[in-house]
Image (cartoon, rainbow, N blue to C red):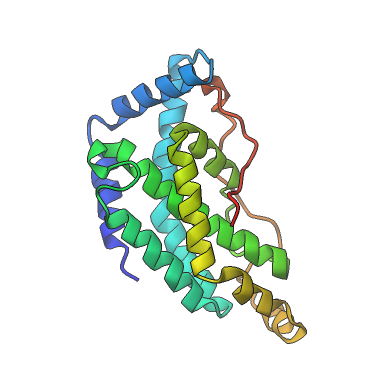
Length: 217
């Protein structure tokens, strides 16, 4: 699947000279909403987190393609990626793209939360992690930054996408004994926990809490 359009959009938007100021202004509003009084360094950390979160999307989409192919879930992942890329191509989505960096928050959240939900379903049935990174805490932080009612609408999009791809039944079929033997031989699907995750420990000054939240699917 071609994700060059997403990569270009992210590069152009994140490289805009107004991006840092726009993010700091947004995060100031978020902190006020959460009754926090952030220092300049807190706003800087928050802006770097948001940029890193958005820039993570192309990497995770590429990992998802490879991981799904390795375990026979190509068609289900193809449906996920098609829906996600279609969302990126809409300008007038839940948070319109013409708002610059702010307009990419929903696109990135939809992408990474949907992939994490896919991975969570896979791990529940097989005991293995599909991706080398766990984005649950980072997704929770981004959800708080986006806020309601937008976050709830995005969670519904994720739940609908997972349901339409019939992920639960597809992954449940992989829990059979024969499938488990096959999966055990695939060394590139991680038996251990995720090797890393996006740092969220420097965001407390913004009033954000690290308790991960996974949308219902």
